[in-house]
Image 1 (cartoon, rainbow, N blue to C red):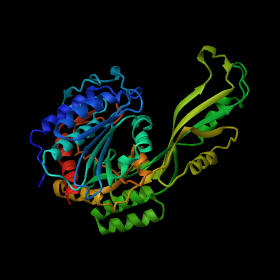
Image 2 (cartoon, helix red, strand yellow; image 1 turned 45 degrees about the horizontal axis):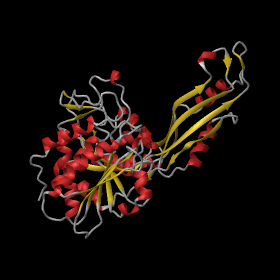
Image 3 (cartoon, rainbow, N blue to C red; image 1 turned 90 degrees about the horizontal axis):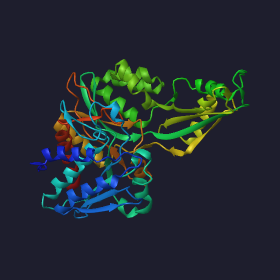
Image 4 (cartoon, one colour; image 1 turned 135 degrees about the vertical axis):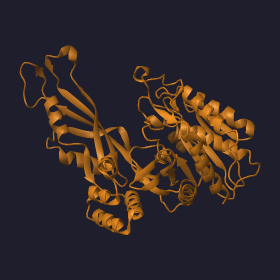
Length: 449
């Protein structure tokens, strides 16, 4: 029996717009206002709600629809905070949730208040079934994901461990439609890269700007940074991406699959992707999935008010993204091996290190996702890796498998969107009921089978 969403599709659009209008820019966050909005939405239909505020304004909602307890709960997880938006860079006000050209425009519309709204409506639909499920369904809408989760999921894991006796969680990070040749796939994020952010420091004698030298700190640092090239370090194929490429190639032909596997075994990743059916744009777009990467995101040296002074210290900040299985020690060694100047110090920046992770594709929830997508979309689900990082890292440390899956259909030809963290971020309205029905069926089927 499919879930009945009668009257809830239009309400979903209103809920997403309401959430976007609540400015939860982090910092400072103010997620508690959004948590209260959701509690007021869910409590009247008998869903248990608790707002947990570990720091003033940093609110987390835990909502639970009780089942029979025959099986462990399913978690629908997402974050309430958003990154900053400069109104002068936007076509429409970033927190007005205006509708234009078939999209809801606003910061957080795709990252990830659309998923928060969908999860809330799924809870409403499950509640009005009037019969208990075999599992509790728990919605966790948390704070602070954009800054690491210390006041959100990370805090809950540390201080409320009783909440995490669960089977698995569905999260952000996957669900994108992927067209390769004539075949359509939907990605399910079963792996995500970790982070290893570093600070590079060069030191030298200061001096007068009229007397340049090769050993000044700024030049030492510049030469060291040049040695990382384009930021792609050693290549490696994790199990998730090996399975994904094999499945994509197999849908093309048996010969394509054999050639793809052989090329992967030889470490020829671009060639393997081409054999699987990716064009050059696709090979470049998904290149980060096969490398530890590093990007220079900040530089600091001197003071322009004293432009005639050679500074004694120059500093760079680099955002490192590491594949599952990589360690901080191994990553730092890769960087140091590339830099010939041992006078440039390379250290982890403010403990910003978290390992990457993979969840098994043999898990029942992955199979349920695959079945529903095959039936309703006539497409195949493939495991995939997120090249960023999410709050999944906090649950994975407990051994809880997490799968990123917010299904989204391909945009019509000629229609352009803008996703997470982008200026003019916007969500396609037609995709909201599509995702609602797919995710709702997944939750219902997983909790009744």
